[in-house]
Length: 600
Image (tube, rainbow, N blue to C red; front, side):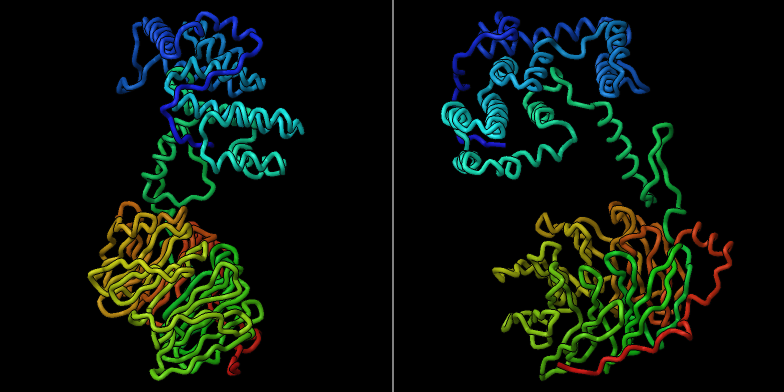
């Protein structure tokens, strides 16, 4: 919460108040200085631990890393949290341990009961350094202040702000925010309490107690649900170390170490789609995973609908381009799709449901080499694409040119993406990765040693994947100035544009095509090759992993084919159910192809 400008100040002198029962219990301790009080408590805690460790077995576990007394305490705490208070009491008595001291018990109850002055007095006993004490006191006094405002006791709240909170030297901005709550009480929850309420389902005071624990040594006040936290940590480590983990809803068991098998990875061809009449250069699943779009050298794009068990069926064929379709881009809500043409000044906007062409966007150019890619802004109303005249165009879905960047001294942009927040455009220009701030038009440049052919941004916007003609794929951290994290290799890429992507559970895998006609899958964190999948008879140009189905991805190849990949279980189910090849081709009774020759 509120940060302090000067932590060298001594703890705030408390206003005089009526002694309470906690004062009587703490009278002897509070007569000492804060430092000596803390030392006394530390000594008591040390003596108590010594008494608990008098048993023969001080350490337990196969390697002797676990202190017996600490294990008993976290078990006791877990029993209490699960509602077995009587069992927890019996364990403490039988084991001769005490979960927490009387000072901590008093402090906990003071916070939950709203005895704010007593709680601050206890904090002064527990923390003798001014920085920790003042920060903890600020949290307690702010809670007191908020509750007074919620009770409409504005006079008392103002007094607390002036006489108790202001002397703590909070930052001026924080004090200003606190003061605005006096004028507009509704801002209390919006500015301050919403974060606490969302942390856990408990009351605001319970969440305050969790925040205050950060200022108290864990040996004195054990963090809440410590045993559960430790177990969850162990399960997460096991899950993250499992290179094949790709499960959405499979629970992790406490009874055995977690280890997935290779059968979690889609490594079987479920469908071969031969609708296109020439090389398939690009494909992409919609954001909701309900559709797949493919683009081909045959001047068409096809929209496929995903059906149960990881299969697809034909929905629309989009025609009207005079040259090869090299790229498609789904709108954020998946209701529209853009198609871009290779070596032609055209971008087309289509209605994904009806297959109707809504607009054709053109620009006059002296080079007849306009755009290779496009990307949507998060609002779903505008999109951006690159031009051969070294310009970047922004259009809206009504066909209007919103903005154009002219005179930017960059080579031809071959691929681009917009970050999820809409603030930055990431593009590749030969050997450079360029990150543009779309508001200030400032740029950051990351250099590669070899020519870059494509890029892919992770769903959370943190990681960037780029394919290089040096037969490597690089993973970079955009939150760490584009730091190179790992190199993936083993595939073949020397001449053609090949597109890789993230995929699977938590995007734990990297999948890419290759000039050797195979599909390669790596584990994202380790860089280990997990699968090399044959099946295509030409260069595999593009891969797309279904964002809603970790067990499904698609590959596009120069062999005119699209392959839909799934797990062994799905392949076996398909064989059992006797799925025919009828879903792999156009339905003869389906509507005709959709043409779009009109221009704005």
